[in-house]
View (cartoon, rainbow, N blue to C red):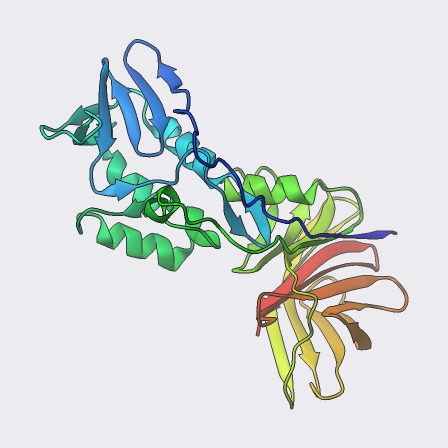
Length: 317
């Protein structure tokens, strides 16, 4: 058994797509009928439409989730492309660029509303899609999964600040965790079986266990006892998947060490009095690694390999 820990801290490119950016190439769907230009602009039968009441990330725009910078503008464009085949649009007014301001639909579905409801655009220029916007924010869909600058602010020069704080642990195999996180953000889960939290994620992929998230190189602070509770997921050598619960306990924040208890799996597991260092904890026997995620260590996650099981766990404070 080997547990691989990779800590990736990437500085965001502050100058990403500055002044002089060219118009992104349109993405063909049905070449003679519909093509998607970006997350809120389509060409239909030779006419260009700007989707009314919404504002999607610019094609070159980036966001950050789980401590990882990702190309949310490209993802929004791809999301609209996935729904726009055969679209029709209606509208009468035009904007300063000569685009018709309208509502587009495909298969009887309002594409303007769909983009906002799935977190690929924000409601703008009125309250037509305020309800969809609220649902997407509450469910942390699309760009609401993490940090982003609104498209309007981005066009005015505001940039996403800060550094990447993406931290990874893997047990029982190999996983390209950065690619997995990107796929999950693009809504391409593949074979991932696990849990997505606000600041971290954990689960199984390609037979291995993975835990990743926003690690701030700090420890929980304060006094008294703090408990994080959540779920555990594991797979055995035959590929059988089991699920249980997890509890991570710090008895006294003034002199912290960590207790990890996993219940409900084919075999109960516990690691007691594990030393804590810079928000990370690693069992002496090497069978478990974990860390605290989020700006205030709101979440915890980790991986383990013991008793013929490979798995991951995580939870919230």
